[in-house]
Length: 158
Picture 1: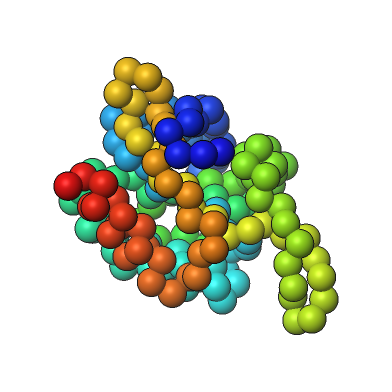
Picture 2: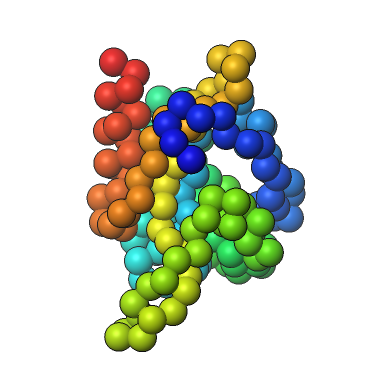
C-alpha cells in the first residue's frame, strides 16, 4: 500500500472478543501498529510507548489499535498486565497480517525465521472518499516510536 491509497475495511476481535472494524473509526485518524508477539521485550516497549503517549493521541482525536497474530486471550492478558488503554486486535489466522504482507524473514539470535514485521500504518478519517493511507512506518524501532508517530500526525494537521 502506498500513501493516498484507499484502505480496505477489516474486522478483527479485540482483547474482549468484541468485533472491531476500521470503519468504526471513520471520523478519526487511526494508528494501526503491528507487532510480532504480545509480552515480548520489543513489543512491550512499543506498546507501553503508545500507552504513555495515549492521552496526547486522545487529545488529537487519534485512535490507536495494536495488532498481532496472538489470540484474543493473549491480547487480553498483555493489555491487563501493562494497563494498555487502547484495543489490541487478535489476528491469529493472519488475515490482515497477510493482506498487508507483513510476514518477513527475520534474524532471531543468528537464526533466520519468518515473523511479523513491526510496521505502523497511519490512516485518514473518511472524507467522503473512504479511509486512505497517510503514511507507513516500515523500519520501526520500539523506543520512541509512539512520539515519532504523534509528531508526524501533528505535522500533517498544520
